[in-house]
Image (spheres, rainbow, N blue to C red):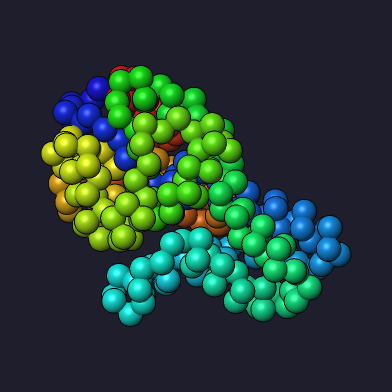
Length: 239
């Protein structure tokens, strides 16, 4: 384990985009549904539009403008808006409900399962996600993700970057903040974790938003570890 990372006993992971490919998974399912229903929909743009509603919805809760709700409920409300935006009016309620559960079926990145198994051999690995518990458990079953435990927005009735999420996870594991490392592909998430005393690992996911989307993938000296993949992270942590 690198000197900077010494003392880490648990890794907590952002999930959407860091562990699983939300864009590719959602676009693939929308494409299949469009074929089945004879719809003319740009599946990649639909996936991005659906995801684009996610952060504003979290922020309304963080500002106290909206009550806490499970991500499944929030995703469904955003889906209704996106269906209108793309002029899709022929889905049944059952089809909408099934499509909304695509977030439970997201596919892991190619390195994710192997990397997590290596990390799990020496460290506690857990989710720390704004997803709800049933979503994260279904996703783990679907993708073979070997979590030791699942921390969700349900666990704390909060959303990241509320400090209660990061400190709450450390507390649930009976660890000091500096014994926990937040792993994410998103720099604001890592900076919020660092402000709470957690170690940080930036994992680069250049295809998170699909091909042709410019992302900030620069390594940052402020992070404890900068990694190209979970396998690289395992190498750097001596797992």
